[in-house]
Length: 145
Image (cartoon, rainbow, N blue to C red; front, side):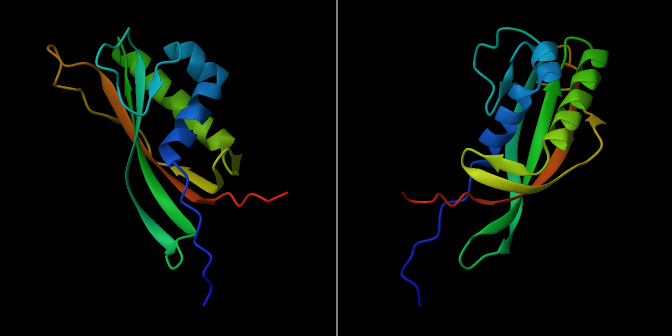
């Protein structure tokens, strides 16, 4: 039995936020308003929020491979702006696809279709599209020098 501790699983929300912020089209469409948590004082619309809501271990003992489920919420000033930005986000994730990131390795990315779900927290309701993404991830093993 090995006494080596498993590496922590990567912060998949942070990886997705970085991917979206590094995409020129997403960046231009929302002026960099891509968050893991919406700020209390948002400086404008449109905006994007990335939230991990679930997942499943593929290799659980030790925890080295899992599918993380992410929800991406996209608010617009107008419904068409929210729809367009949601598509840009879906494309950015699909194009980034498998790769090595700062704290993890992504081997597969799939996205659902976007769904229109007006956000009734705002009066009047703010246009919002949502979609989910599933990322197969594992920790990035760093080679000690």
